[in-house]
Image (cartoon, rainbow, N blue to C red; front, side, top):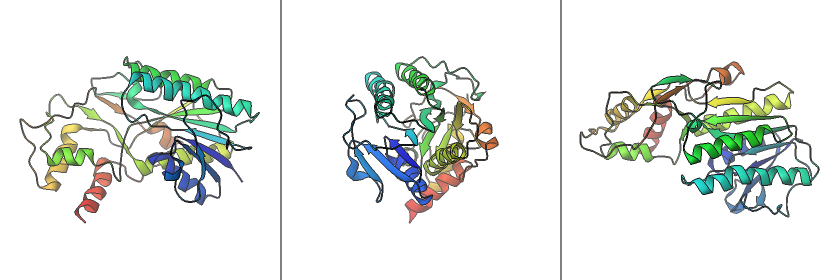
Length: 283
């Protein structure tokens, strides 16, 4: 039986945990409030920002997925959670004299600084200059130099059940100019979990994995296109003087490498994913 620790087992991590559990894997979920884990997931109650190894760290671990969520953009928190927290966890593995078959770290397409609608791949320069982005880049380096076979997955904006912020903004008349187009990238929560599951199963089969993958759907789209489509289905009008999205940057991320590995998104564009959410909200 394969044993995996999902560190930071929140929304995406829990969806991944349930998928791996159905495969017959033994899944440990690490989070501060372990009572919020899905049924059947072995709990590890721990704070990744604390260096002390959890008392209930498992005796045997084959895989680790590092996917905590900071919850807010705070440079100090990003450094403590994504960089130092990752160092703590790798220290716990070494202290336990465990040899991981594979380590998977979840990062973000926010590491890219492109702003002119350029197409971005895993080989594009990741030169975002915010303190939070620099922390993510540093964390990727920690993961890839951790001494175990490892890959980084840079996820785009995650949406899905319970993530209704954009829908509510559109209901309120969100204003997004059509020109210049502000390209956005996204991935449904279930597709994010599915990509992580896919890469873990490839690692289980001793497939050679790339050091980095972009986790995005098939169709980058301008924010104006997405909000206009959504407004039409909600039967509301976007206001010329309404609230703005506050988003910065404009790039188009390619999922070609992930697709070449055999993965395909269940929700290939915003239309399938948000369409399902709108139907659920209507119900």
